[in-house]
Structure formats: structure tokens, C-alpha cells
Length: 547
Image 1 (cartoon, helix red, strand yellow):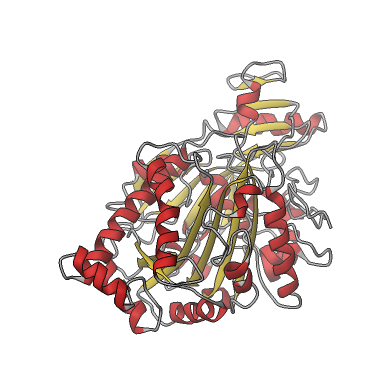
Image 2: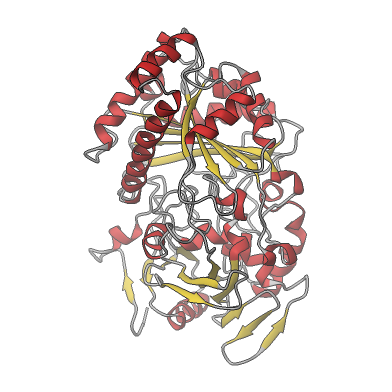
């Protein structure tokens, strides 16, 4: 491929393999060429060349890639790491007066270091190695409070610079798409690229930069509290409690890791001790289930940088949630350790837990690409916990009542498993999202629902771990048979049932409009991948279920 300024790597180039790698080692595709464009004009040239030689393309922003959508066999693979602009600007185009230009190849860790969360806030990737482009084009959910406070990340996009399938360079805002040569296409329902890109963007164009709303107050860190969920009724009760407040956002976080998985000097010994501590608490309290961490974030305006743990605990207790420390023996022990003040215990635990969480964030950002394979399940818009609570509590590998905290999941070769229950109770909407909704499924009932995610990582040579997630998926699929639910775009669309319309799980009733927008801007389907609008593969998944 003849190029000017950008780099082209073929399979014989020593840098090829390093640039081929994405986070998920399950993504084994070998592109024909890897290109690292530096400008929008480079991207335009590459797309025109791919079309001339009838060669497929794939695009990588951060390369986190649970689904392997960001890389394709025998394709021209665009690695967008040079598009890493992070520049805060004052602009009347943002409802807050403040925004940032973010390159699609920037990662959220670098964004957070540039746009200080001590003074500003915005929805961002939970894992700091996530790329800006994949996060925003797929909707963009942050589970620690900014979603419930401000909405989806995609709802903070003001405008985008992009390259179309024919190589045209354009700017896309809420009303129109403007070509570099001055031509203008005013948006109608059938060609609204602004609507389509914010949720189905990887099917429609390559976005190089986003103008993104920045809010003029600090990001609030969560309080972390241990509670007991002994049975399915407790999980359902917690969902109802989460709906009863406009002050707090809740996420239940539970992790299982093999010994030696974590490497940071502070993190490694703490993560070795944590299972033993949880086992001791379970036994000492005569419980059948382990205590579970709840991350509670104050989502009110002006909340400040941290959520106070004591009022959060008091809220849970007042609403019938059993918090660690609520029985007589714990009260005696904790008051003795904390100088007679129960609140002091919760404050100290919260500080230690937040340090632990920050260490996890730092290590996640430097995880080595292709070191582990990953497999996930995801279900959203659930108005009841009945479809999954049985598995969350009783599953022999990942449930709260499994035999050991260092559970049989390790024997199944899983190095790390992460359970997340995100309680959606959003309070805020950006003005632009109210007048110009995004294309990810946004049914009204999602504002008061629960989303679950289980992700497991394992060494590529060991595949028994996939049984854990696939068996869980099969059970939940059966439990939810005939019920309505959604999936988040950045997770696999795989299911054990072939009759599930996975496009509707992502885009809901927007599918027909998106197909018209796709036909207008990309009639030859240049931007085709496993989860794109024109894909018909019902089991779009790196590890399909064996049955």
C-alpha cells in the first residue's frame, strides 16, 4: 500500500504483532495490513484504497474489545492510537460552557489525568484502558454514578469529526453533516448521522474526534460498604431500595481472582488477604453467604469528591438492608476496635476499600494485551432480579453461597471473574440528549432497572473457564424466556437461543431507522463487523455455547 506519512505494517514487520494485539486474547484474527493513520486525510486514503482493492477493514480505538469487533481476518486494520487529542475548551456549544476535544484513540486513563476529576466530571470508561471511540460510539455507561447523574456518555457528545465510507471528511452535529469542501446535508430521520453515530457508530463511519461535554463539578467517588444478601428475596429488596432514592447510585461489585493474579505491590497482598477475611466474616456471623461489596455514589449536584459512608450505611439500615455490623457480636467487636463509634468502622473500611479499588484501576490500565482471554454475559433493562438472583446467590462457581471464597471457579481455570449488578436509577439528562436522543436502546423503563454483567478472564491455553459463563448464560436465558431485556452494545450478543433478535436488544425500536441511515451513508457496507447493523450472525460471540 502506497502511503505518505502514516505507517503500514505487514505480517513480516516486527511491529506487526504488537499492533495486532487487543486486550482479549480470544481475538486471533490476522489482518493483511496494519496501518497507523495520523490525520483524517490518511484515514480517507486508506478507505479509498480498501474499496479500490475490495479489501475489508477493521478499526481499533483503545483495543479493549470483549467482542473482537475491532479486528478482522485478512483486513486492512486501522489502529487509531495517533488520534489521541485531549484538549479542554470553553464553548457555547456545550450546555455547561465547557467541553473537551477527545481523539478516538485516546484512553480514558489519559483523559482522567488531563481533565482532573477533582474539578470536573463526565461519563468515562470504568476500566481506564478503554478507548474513547469504542466507549462513546457504543453508548458509554459508567457504573459508579456518572450514568445515573448525567446519562450515557454518548449523550454528552456535541459534535464529531468523521470519515465516511467513500473517504469524505465531515463534521457531524445535531442538525447537519458538513463536508470538508463545504457541502451540507441537513439531517432528516432517514439520514441523521448524528443520531446513528451515537450508539451504532462503528456501523456508519470512522469518527476521529469528539467534542464532549464536561461538567463543572468534581466526580464523586463511591462509598464502599459490605452488606449481606442471603437469598433471592434480599437481592430483589435491594433493587426496590435503590429505586427509592434520588440521592444515591448503587453498584454491587464482587470479584474472584486466583492467587498471584494481581501484581501491584500494595494490591497483591491485600487481594490475597481479602478472601480469608470474607471467609472469616461468613463463619463468624453464622451466614451461608459471603458479604458483598456495594459501591454507593452520591449523585446529587454539589456532592463533592467523596461519598460519606456513614449516611449511606444509615440509609441502607433504615430501608431494611442488613449491613455488616448489624448483629450483636459485630457491634461489640467493631465498637471496641473503633473507639466506641460504629461510624468510625465504616469510615475506615471505606478508606481501605477505596485504596484497594484505586489500585485495581491502576493495574487494569497496564494489563498486557492478549495475555488473557475474556468471556462475558450481560443483561440490562431488567425490572426484577428474579431472572438472575438464583445464579448470583447459588451458582457453585461464582455465587455468594459457594463452598469456598477461593472457589471452584479457579479449578475451572478462570484467573479472574467479576460480577457487577448496576442499579439504574438515572436522574439527569443532558439538554442535547433530551432534544436529540441517542440510538442505543433507551426505553423509558431503563431509567429504573438493573443491569448485570459477569466477565471472566483466563489464560488462552485454558478454556474450561468458558463453561462457567456459558452455563450461567444458558440458565439466565431460560429464566428470561419471553421477557423483555436489553444488552449493552460493547458486550457479546451471543445467546443460547437462536430466535433472539439481538439487534433489538441493542437498538430497540431504532433498528429500522438505523438501517435507513446505514443505507444512506454506507450503501456498500464498508463498515461491517460482528455486531454491525447488517450482520445476520445470531451468535456473535468469541466463545459460543457448545449446545
